[in-house]
Length: 142
View 1: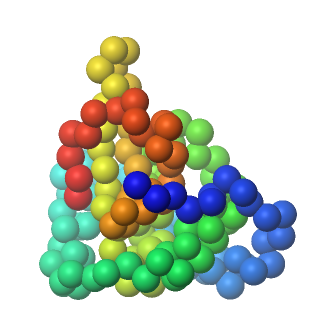
View 2: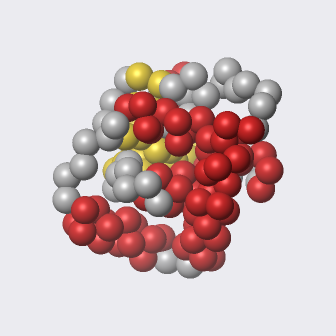
């Protein structure tokens, strides 16, 4: 699985500020979805979008630009420590604003029991590292 160099963040926000309005809207949509106790409704929202769009192949350059913007803009709005569910929702909604489909992956570490989720697009891991997700058994992908 390939990863983007998300942890090599450059110090300048300037190139990413053009994405700020879309990022804020993604946060608002994710907050509404996150407030919905029924995760099944959130998953159905994502599935319905995928059905409307059909099969989309991610453009690696565009995907990298958007994921990098997400990583730079995220600290302006929220911290992602122990927020994998919300962070993944924001990233999915942010990418959707640019018609990029991604897969939401749910995993669990069994002892001690720890749930976790992350986002990938094709072979690209978008908001986590291979070393971290390797500890989890995949339960579902949407």
